[in-house]
Length: 376
Ligand SMILES: [Zn+2]
Figure 1: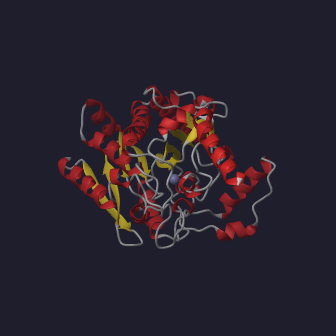
Figure 2: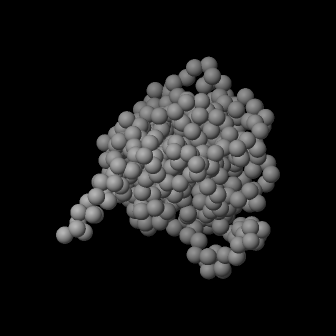
Figure 3: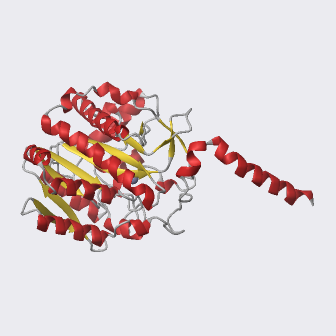
């Protein structure tokens, strides 16, 4: 008799306690809990479809008087066009990609918004376009986008684990691990790397090898997290680097940290965003990682090129109301970086300030339960 009643009391106590534990969070989650794929996707009505994103790209190109060119570099596993938007005439080449993880909202919208600002003109924009050439990919994974799942649809693999790792890179990983006091990865790990199983990976590697970008920025989403370990403040934006510094040249490490500092400063300036640092990872088989390491292509060939790359992670689990600032923080971050590349001030940024960006704290929502929505 008393048991159900005690459970009931405990539940009420938990409900009363919840807002006290994290007062800043209750409001932020007004749009409901982080809903996993397959249980309905509450935010999709505010998101464009893959076909709509493509149509907008082509409409922009038509308006651009030839400045913007859309190229189909291949087809997805289910036959959707894999499109890259090329704009700008400058010598510095910048690659921006969104939505490699199909269930991470707004990467496509952020890339598209940024593209719109490039097309819409103005003195500053013309200056940037005379110094920089862009390759912009709003949707890397159109099938996953439509299915609202992280992976591609045909192979059901994470496309951000499908670029090339050769023996030299594998040996580098184990050197880094030894330096960190970690056991070496076994030989079977090398044999298990999935290299270019997906047609998307193949198509975009050749596009990358052809364009050979100096800089790359990869747009992602994560769950909802605290700022650091001792605040009740929510972070909506993290910046990250997908490799151990020991995998990179000093020049690469400095450049990618400078990019992170600029994006964090720009996002924080709005006053509603506190940028945090994405936790340590070392994933050479990721797209931008392999691009930094001159990873081999689908047929074992080499582009003989090393990009400088980092990634943005925006808060997920959001409705239409929040999408505006999520998109804005991405666009602000991108502009801060490209302005500094364009006017030559990137090299003057203090790279060590990267280490002063607050760490990302514990998860606020249910990422542990639905890890496919939360990690890089
Ligand atoms: Zn992601």
